Structure formats: structure tokens, C-alpha cells
Image (cartoon, rainbow, N blue to C red; front, side, top):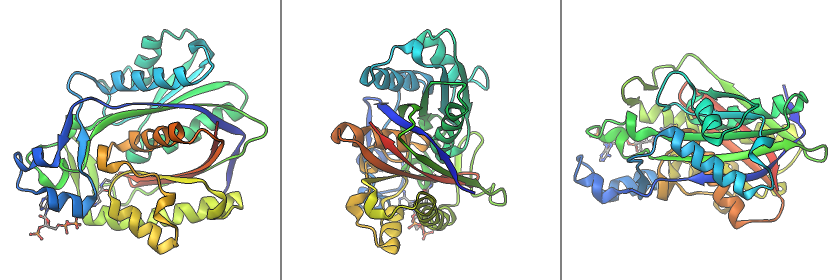
Length: 308
Ligand SMILES: CC(C)(COP(=O)(O)OP(=O)(O)OC[C@H]1O[C@@H](n2cnc3c(N)ncnc32)[C@H](O)[C@@H]1OP(=O)(O)O)[C@@H](O)C(=O)NCCC(=O)NCCS
């Protein structure tokens, strides 16, 4: 099944906490080394939220996206936040963001699809806008993963960081946005969060390479485009070796991928919107972007849409 909507991204924003946790810092906390982390993952440092909650970071990213747009905050009538690290079961992070922005009339809710959450949220928002019931959606990925990391477990604590990215989308008859999101329920133990993140790293790695390749091929096929029509691929920022494997096997130049995981590690649902924002701020011309993600569940997905 192909999912086509007529929407475009009109602005992006991000927020990352100031505190930097380097590989050198982690060497003092667990039995690891900068050399191991860089060679196995590409990650050099990550941000850690001290005072900020996932809600605070979502709000700050939303302010940035609103500031980049010509909209008034009351033009927003839909807020969807992708997060697995909100402070409360309810109200949702999105409800809190609505309150902090003081938006009176709007639907707001969270989506939990782990690291694929932002791509899922974008598809849901695009569908609701396509229905004609909503005009401007704020779609946010925000995570405070430091809250669910066991800093004595070297298998996981070196990989993740905190941050938030936000996007505003609206209907546009001249633009076409394609979505492909999937999940499978038979691998629910491979990556879980109860108190802490637990993960079968090798299994996740193999799964990630496989579904990223399939998701890129599928969405290009749906859109009847080739990789040359795409200006940038924004992948989920989990591990440089995963992205390198995908690039090599699909024979795509690594330069086509926006990569910032060296600075932030894996920020789960925030990773794609943060990278998208950094790309958008560097490249002001209208661009065809391909998003591709994967995560616990397992979940995975991709999208092709236009920005600006
Ligand atoms: C986690 C990951 C980096 C591990 O890399 P890897 O090359 O697969 O390494 P392995 O799991 O084979 O472990 C190799 C060895 O390094 C050790 N090791 C694990 N973490 C380490 C660390 N931080 N520092 C030093 N050694 C470490 C392991 O204990 C293992 O030792 P052993 O051979 O004595 O048992 C990699 O599997 C990965 O990135 N997986 C995907 C994770 C992911 O993306 N998760 C998020 C999904 S949204």
C-alpha cells in the first residue's frame, strides 16, 4: 500500500541541552574506551539534560520551529509529540506543550513508536491535515533518555543522549509527501525500556541495516523517484556503521546522508527531527528529503517530502 498526502514542511527547530558527556567522561564511569566507542559507533559525545524534562525540550524545540515560521502560535491546531520518556503517563508531553505555548484550540497527543516515533507522528499528522480537519501541525520528537539509562551498563549507556526536534507542516496542493511505516511484534524483547534500556545490540544492528535498506527502496519506488532526485537522506542516528552498511549496499554516496550522531549519540524519536533541522538551517533552498528510521518494537519507516 502506498500512502500519499499533500503536505509540506514549512519550518523546523531543535533544542539540545548544554551539558556534554564525552567518551572520555564515560571511560571514568564504565569499562570502555574512546577508541572502542568511536570505532564501533562513530559517537564522540552526547548531550545530557540536567534540569530540562522531555516536555521542556519539546517546548524549546517548538519555540524554535515557530520562530522560523511566519505563523502565530494560535495557527497551530494539532500537536503530536513522539516520545518514550515523558514525565507522566498522562497528561501527555503534547498536552503540556500545548499548555506551555498557551494554545487554546488544538488536538494534542503523544505517539510511542520508540526511535521510529517521529516518522510515525509525521504520517499521522499528515493524514489528519489531508483530511481537511487541521491546518498546521507541530510534530515533535523529544527524549530524555538519560532518565532510562543504566550508567553501569556499557552496552547501552554509551549509545544514547537527550534532545528534541520539531517540525511544522501544512497542506500544500503542489507538494507530495509519501509515507511507509511498519512494525512487527515478534521481536518485542530485542529492545525494551522498563526501568532502563535493555538491548540485544547485534540483533538490533542486523535488523536496522535490513529494514533501512528496504524502507529506502520502498519509498523511492512509491514516489517513483530515484536516489538522484533526493537531496538528502536523514537517517535515524544510531550508529555510523549501520548508515555506512546501508549506503554501501544500496550504492549511495555517504555524503547524501545527514549525519550528526558524533555530536548527540542516539536521541531516539528526536534524532531525525534534530538532523532535519540542522540540514534545513544549512540548506535554505527547497529540498526533497528522505527520512528513514527504525527502533524498538520492532518499528521502522520512511518518508519522502519537501521542505520550505
Ligand atoms: C551495541 C553495538 C555498538 C555493539 O557493537 P558490536 O560490534 O556489535 O559489538 P558486540 O556486541 O559484538 O560486542 C563486542 C565486545 O565488546 C564489548 N563491549 C560492549 N560494549 C562495550 C563498550 N562500551 N566498551 C567496550 N567494550 C564493549 C562486549 O562485551 C563484547 O565483548 P565480548 O566479545 O568479550 O563478549 C552494536 O551492536 C550496535 O550499535 N547495535 C545497534 C544498537 C542500536 O542501534 N540501538 C538502538 C536502536 S534504535
